[in-house]
Length: 410
Image (cartoon, rainbow, N blue to C red):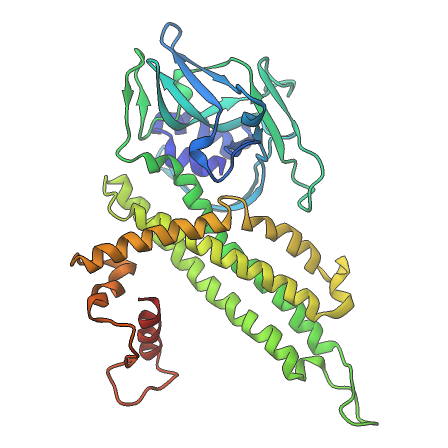
């Protein structure tokens, strides 16, 4: 999340200053948002960044135990497109973004105070360790949080500040900014600060497909080579994949992995399209992007996590062995149900968006994009209705299926 935040929140000058050193691994960065006391409820974050106009610096402070940054870290595959000095960098790169022992910089989300007023959450790039000795800087307390359910190769850590000063220019100012005299220039939308979370949620949808597909591959291959339970005495034991009960467990999960792959690609394309519009000042689809990424993140991670466990059980006792590969897939993936937004809250955010859209549709407003199916809601009733405007429905006709899904969703 460190590099995507620089790309989405930093000015061109800040990208020149921080992005290329980070790209070349001269800067090792992490994203510090979640705190001991608050995670999904972002407005409750307590870390403060108070502007001092006399020195043109921000003073970062962790005023309570619950304000300590907790959990920064993670290993993410990030697709990056960046233009610098007429050169374009395009890569799918794995960046290990960790604070416990590795990082020397952090993007820190803190409550901005200037001219005696709180302006809400903003992102700051903060050096946390000496570049030469790697020792924590004075005013910074940082360390590893210890063993976890899984992902022990990643040094998730904690981070706190005691009146730690950074230059004014270290506030990421692509959308909002603080002038040297402390004057605050607000962004077009407060939600632009959360752009990195939306990006990661869109990536998680694709990761759900990849993790579930790996578990399905293992379970189906195992089922093809495992023979057990002769049908008749004296007959060879069949592949367990031939049993309908095994097929019932695994084949729907395989189909789901394919579906998640396609929706993950769609989510990525939608994110880049809408963020392109945002760069041009068009924020019309920003609420839709938030709702779509939140709902899909929750749905795909819940289904994939349960599906991976189903694959483990489909392998019998061997599935419990780490040599099967499935336990590691599970403990690595299952945190996705809670990081970048706890799933129940994510579903509620999407539901709130849908209720607002439904109200708009029933008031006669014409909706576009993914909400266009609600435009006919005024003519729909609870009574049974035909699913398509044809006398016969072919279940292999994709248009018929789309109409059925529209009817059910509305």
